[in-house]
Length: 398
Image 1 (cartoon, rainbow, N blue to C red):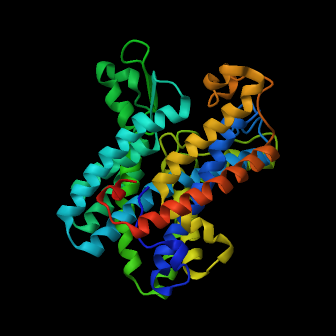
Image 2 (image 1 turned 180 degrees about the vertical axis):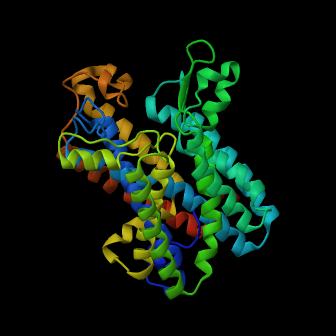
């Protein structure tokens, strides 16, 4: 999640010379508001089963969760693009490498401190989630950028296409070295000492590949607009078609094969229900394919109604931190009249452990989501304008 330009979208929305950068901010802003929807659902839902459980879910609930699959791949891919654009502006790989390395470690630090506490309000729990994945991917990219772009792309493709070969290798099989495999490929909860819990939710191998591909993809932005648009369309549709073919064959690319269900609709949901933790080849084909088509749409059309997305998309890390705290604090405030101080420690992220009378139905979830976005907009707009007017070095890390 990396801001790619210091120009204020609020002040320069109509200037053609930065339209390409605005299209990236629009893409990033869109997936960020979808991310906020997923997190609002996490904290406020009254559903006590996984929205992706095709045997129990409803179509609106399934797609409310499923559409947010676009978020993490887009964040990581866009961070790679941002790194390439930074190199293109400054033409200094040594400086870029240092920035990627230090910013990556900073994101890992934030994940294990500010973000982990925002999720649970619990000082004995640490989560390694999306900022963890982005941070370590930046650290790896700091070294990769010295390679030819084609080599970087090849490396990324090999990680994404090949990592599902190791789906049957598990932490328990590796003994004392199992934690390394958890960091690389298999989500796992550890209790390293005392009552401390450490959950690895975003294993690194596929995400490093996505960021490497994002960096290599940055060269596409140098193409003339009509040629670029044609390539984006073909690439996006090609990735989605590859997903359909491989998913239909049902042999490789995802640890959860689809299966026939009680009716056609539930069978379709099973077909679409691909694995995010870690992101399978099929998951990434589908989500990046859709993301690239969205990007192409934003490249070719100017949706004035979506202008607020450029604000959110221009300050992604700031948005990410603020929105988690705002959602969690809001959940506590709303739950407080019923649960008192216990509202602070309710297991909001584990719906099966929540009191049966807690939470709201899907229409109310959407209303809460919109209210959260309305509150976030002026805050993010202020910070976007602050970044545009100030050039302090520390702003590169927010």
